Amino acid sequence: MKQKGVLQIVACLVCLVLFSCRATKITRATFPSDTTGNNIVKDTVDIEKQRALSREIVEKIRGNRIEFKTMAAEMKMDYDDDKGKRMNNLTVNVRMQYDSVIWLRVSGMAGIEGARILVTRDSVKVLNKLEGTITLRNTEQAKDMLKMDLNLTALQDLIAGNAVFLPDSITGVVRTPSVISFAALQKDLVCLFNVFADDYEVQQVKVADRDSTAANPRVMELTYGDRRTVDGRRMAFQRKIYVEEKSVVKVSLDFRKVEFDKPLTFPFTVPDKYTRQ
Image (cartoon, rainbow, N blue to C red; front, side, top):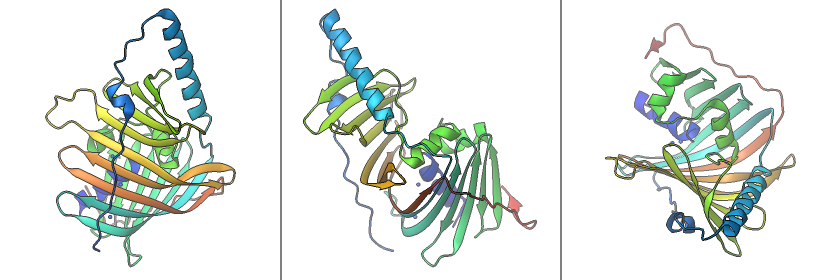
């Protein structure tokens, strides 16, 4: 597993921007709010109604938030890109202590551990066990390396399945009997959401650069499915990720086991013989 490949795994896992023979099949979502985000509200009454509706939607989505002190999970990961690289049936073990640490172990089909990753508030450490290297980055270096601007708690929310990129104000709300679609504007991003109309659980999210004229505008789509209840928490056990920038990457994550609020350890020992990258 080359250093570049290990870092690519890190990016897909914690970006929420995450390896044999079959391709990962991902159906891209449609977002009605994508074409209605510029609707003009005609009068003050309509404006107030829209604001009240927006507040209600955001509050109900946040009401589904998964709270935890610690979380441990095992998942299967399939990876496919447009350059012909396909890696299936990787096992990823995740341990998290909220607002403190993310610990990841990536193993191949034969159970051979290829990488161990430790993410804290101020650093990212990647232990490449196949090549005998250790990569150390501080927070700012890691953001540049992974091309993301998410803090530790946002990354943990992304892994747990909580809504991220969700501000207090939304726009372009479109209701159907089964789905509510809307847009949320960030400083440099446009975020489109589809949530189920009955329980306000997130179905799909699309995140794109606001500057669509950029040379390689980024697009990331996440789809959530197979929700199950674990210790009173509703969690999506299946995730589909589509990332497009200079290339196209498709990732499928299937959670096999999840536990909350159990005592955890985060072993991360670097052998003296390892080379620092």
